Image (cartoon, rainbow, N blue to C red; front, side, top):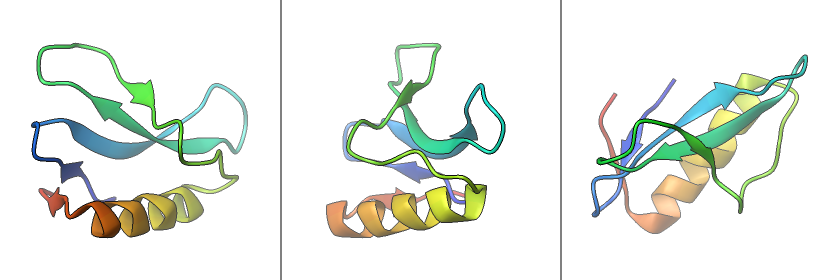
Length: 67
């Protein structure tokens, strides 16, 4: 799975939700310890679909892929 970083140093990656077959992109601020949902992206039933959403969003925003 791809991990991205924006110009502020925030990290973005796909993570599972609490339910079965729920995945969504999440972000983490450098000074924070927890991950939060990216509100603009939907919940998906597969990690692959959620990753596709994040990949497209990151490309539009010009984020750099770090892994």
